Image (cartoon, rainbow, N blue to C red; front, side, top):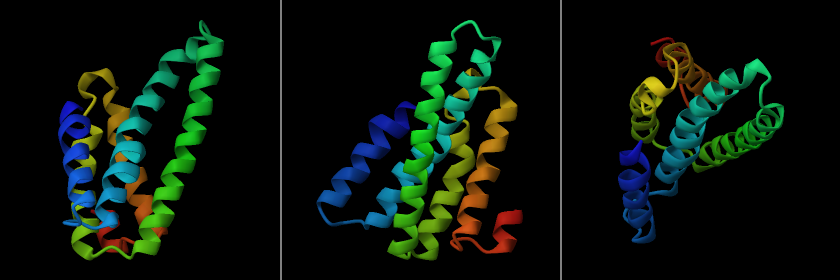
Length: 137
């Protein structure tokens, strides 16, 4: 988790600012990996923990945040479609999907971690950024 937020994100931001990398790579990391996988997994786990009804206001707040994050993910996906990323960028984002799903470790149940990457792959497939063979892998 720390590597993603403390190392990768600032490094990629610096690369973008210096013009050494493309916006598609930034979108891939921020919207797809961080919001679409890491934060989505954490929110899903938190909502699962709040199913007991003990903190209804907190649950409602997290549901609102989750809905807002879905917009961010969709926006990022739209930007990625428009950016027409190279196959290498898509492959790199895909390669990081499983690793990113594990960022929470045991704090997020394994069934949630294991369900996040396939959802992510479906998004890329629907957006026609991923062919059917790669989505099945």
